Length: 140
Image (tube, rainbow, N blue to C red; front, side, top):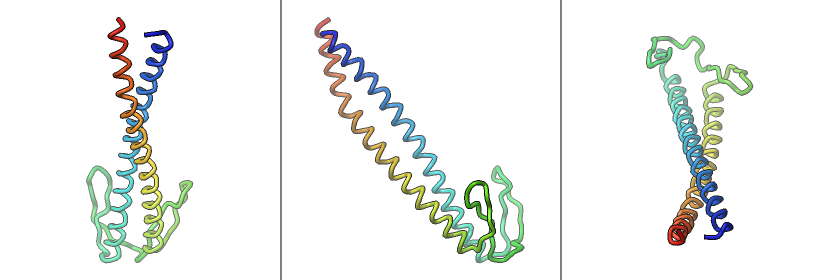
C-alpha cells in the first residue's frame, strides 16, 4: 500500500468515526424531541381534562400530586417565550401547545433525515474501509 493509499485509509477511518459520533448525537437529540412531543401531548390531554373537571390533581414533582380546584374557570398560564407567561383561555393555550407540537415534529423530521443520511454514508464507507484494510493486510 502506497503512502497516498495509507493516507486515504486514515482519512476514511477518521471520517467514519466522525460520522458515528454525528449519528449518536442525532439519535440522542431525536430522543429528546420525542420526549418533548410526548410531554406536549400530555399537556393537551390535561387541558381537555381541565375543561371537563374542576377538581384535579396537581403534580408537585417526582410522581407526587395534591388534589386541587381550578379557581379561574377556563384560564391557564402559558409560557409564550423569553420566560414570559401569559394568562390564556384553554383554547388559546391548546393552540399554542399544538403549534409547539408542529414545530417539534418538524425538528423530528429533520433529525430523522439527518439520521438516514448519516447511516447511508456509514453504510457506503464501511465496505470501502474493509476493502482497503484487506488490501493493506495483503501488502504486509
